[in-house]
Image 1 (cartoon, rainbow, N blue to C red):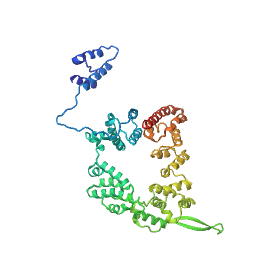
Image 2: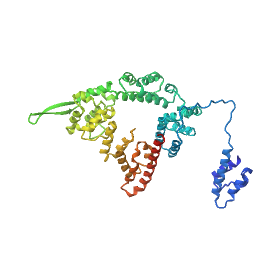
Image 3: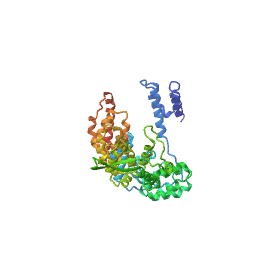
Image 4: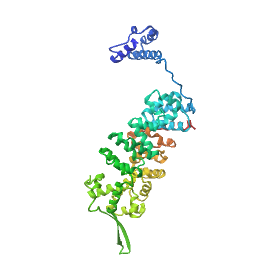
Length: 494
């Protein structure tokens, strides 16, 4: 349409330089355009926008779908499950308007759990969402049902709904898809994942090898050692480094055993008479052997300290302690975690090494030692919290919240389970005083962790600073809106 080109030209030049006049419109527009151009109550810009809207809608109504003869497409298969209720659909529309990935995930989880499907109108909307948010793909695929599977064949970007098997994706998928498949298989069947990588290893380039090898850090175990040791001798440095990093996660590997043997020589127990010879005092002695196998330094242990206040020897010992499983100390001293922690706490010279052991607790995900540290250490180590049972995570997070607010929140947002009401209350109070750091975007992202029971507590969490009160008021209203949508979602599927 010539008139549409004229409108575009006017939009680009501006209404001061170019206006669309009545003579440019065809007879179809004569009557309706007269009502616009003769309206003296609006300015020329408003007239232009109204005329543009009329022509745009005219063009849309007059468009015909592309038609090609000879195309015989089968209809979508009959669905196995029912479409969700209208109430649930209405809430989904509100969630999509809010653009909350967190709430959308909750809605999809409830929908899938109840074996229901999204209304057909929203299937392409969800497929588009899942195209950008990979974490949604499994949920969207289930909630879109057979219609979603059928529709995916017309858009390559929705191929996650094509029913392609993991084996096919591993053989023919993109680098990112292959990595995801390997990571997922590593969780459910570590041995098969390793075998798949071994089979294609000769055809992979160095970058691909290094990227795919990272997946073996998931559930790394003794069965991986032999092959990883072979990989650690390859020419590409990035591949060698990655293999060595994974071997360091396996307690039975040769490199970890070297560290343990060196520590056995370095850290010893010394018994001395005390109280006029009536009692025996046991203390730790820490000193590196005079001669150390140089191979140790080829495994990533640094010789020289990177901090002036830390001597080289102390720096080396700390690195070794970080790199061995914490239960190694139990066999070394024939003692339980409580006793060993107390050994280290007795002297200032040995107390400093507890931080290195805490790093090893986190590195090897030793939950038993995490509990022991929380119970018997005189120092609170924040990084241990995620390894504790959920009830203890809540207890210690609340107990030490003051002074560790940001760190505790950073750990809390990594949880899969909802926060307790008391922890949520503490987080609300702190974020109310820091409304720019913890803003609407923060709560939009993590609303799935906020328990709905807290909705009545928001009024009590006002910031101390009057300047921040208006900002928090807006944030508080937004949180209430998100929690309300969460409550409505739960009710819609009951």
